[in-house]
Length: 257
Ligand code: SF4
Ligand code: SF4
Ligand code: SF4
Image 1 (cartoon, rainbow, N blue to C red):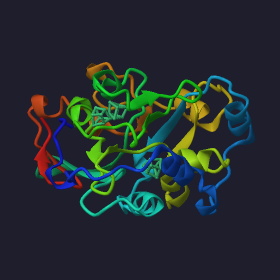
Image 2: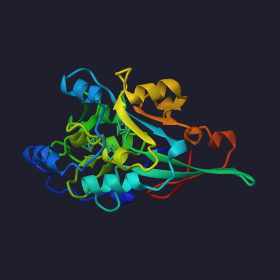
Image 3: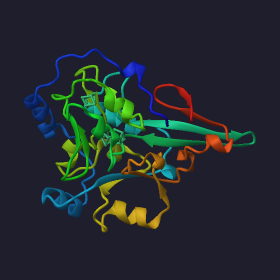
């Protein structure tokens, strides 16, 4: 996908949460819904401060496009209407009678070389050393939108409630409590697997080792940490191959370019 600024996600800047309020919000882990417990090894590795890179593997063969993940994410963070941290693209390819329609769940890739971090003039966003999660401090963000422009995955938006940049944070408040992210927990088809890819014995590492996987827009050099199985339609060269590709996103009808 090309990076486009979401018009409908733009909002006026309002006083952001104070750092204390933000920490309090994140710390309100009592609100964490019941969910699948992370593998003990992964949780232990995280709490021990071992270098961890959290990642997600999405098996598109198991995705029915039901949007349960999108709804769970929206509810988990009370994301305002017109904005989203998680969405599912409907990808139509080909020409009759050789046509296909597939589903591509999307979220921030928690890149190892995140362009969003390098452009931020306020140091409001960074990649956590302890687990590789790319986070935003809304108390520091000045709402300049540089990161929104820089992200090749259209993963960020301005939260109209805080006036700060926002995006998926891999549900850190849940992960810290040892449960998987909301979108993983709610996925009916078990299409999403979350864990530490630096742990060769984690479920995600084993699945990645035993399946052909891809990442989105590899040529951007951001080294995404969201992997896909069966996402042949994720190849941005589709359009240049002369194939008809129509992508219905959470924001608008868009042709992949
Ligand atoms: S997907 Fe975009 S917002 Fe997320 S880490 Fe990568 S560049 Fe940053
Ligand atoms: S919108 Fe916020 S997080 Fe993004 S670049 Fe500007 S200050 Fe940094
Ligand atoms: S990991 Fe959490 S924040 Fe990220 S898409 Fe899933 S539910 Fe939303």
